Image (cartoon, helix red, strand yellow):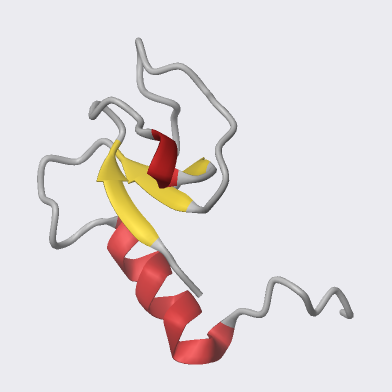
Length: 71
């Protein structure tokens, strides 16, 4: 699974894929767009310790299967 991290204020590029906001509030001035892969975007200045990093680690550790829809 390819998961990338980007700040919300960085301009999206085609290779980003879908950009999923992981902060509580969508940042001002940032448009919501559709892309081809998942990119977790965040507004924090700390690029190493934020919600996107925690979510990426959670998914890559196998704790979340987006294809398992059973409850």
